Length: 324
Ligand SMILES: Nc1ncnc2c1ncn2[C@@H]1O[C@H](COP(=O)(O)OP(=O)(O)O)[C@@H](O)[C@H]1O
Ligand SMILES: [Mg+2]
Image (cartoon, rainbow, N blue to C red; front, side, top):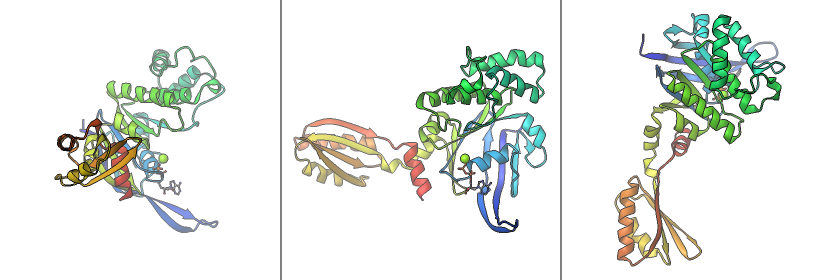
């Protein structure tokens, strides 16, 4: 078995904008020569702003769209040649409402899709209740889907993508439009699926979600890969905007002056609120600098009321990469 469940090389996709007569007026490059590989068992994130090319990537990898050039192999198969074999071995979940039958029950939906995927009834009769349990719909499986909340529908979508027990799942913004509790349920299910050994490719534009779930993340912007790393690695790229913060009573001017001379401090700024001054120190060495700030304050006879170090978040890293 190859090491990677997904491998792309110079994967490229353009869309043609045609006029009324079908003549190509202009082309949009949705994906520019993407090279990524995803390991078996990995939970791989693709993040990027709207229009970055996330859905285009997922559609190509799941054989719903052909690349303009370049290659992509999914589970060892070519996306331009082995469409049907790939489809039998992957599950796809898109955000949004489409793709379920609202007038019948959740259970009936899953039995129908099992049949569509050629799962023998003897297998699906056992598998479907397990899936219902897994996505937390036990007790509601005999209600019509039209009675389901958005979150329940999305959980049913995930169950639907699993009826044929594929080893690889594509989740394109699976929590979009869900309330916080609904999103949390979906994240929990995604985590469980990873633990069960599924390989998962997830797109999202919620940074905390990518941070919490993903082993590695590809950041794409305007169709181009701008970074690929573990969440911790991406955050390291913005280590310089770590903020050490101290709150002191009274006039902090002498403290601020002495902080500016510490090595590796790039900025010091302050705010007065009530009787306290909040001093923020931007530096890659947050906790070291915080210690130095504390001793400077005690030399200056300033009482520290509170102190903290705020490490940069994935959102900070993302914003910088996407803005550059
Ligand atoms: N069917 C289409 N026809 C023309 N342009 C498209 C089509 N689908 C997507 N695009 C364009 O391709 C780019 C990438 O879109 P998409 O892959 O949907 O991005 P994302 O999912 O990251 O928001 C965008 O500029 C989008 O407008
Ligand atoms: Mg999209």
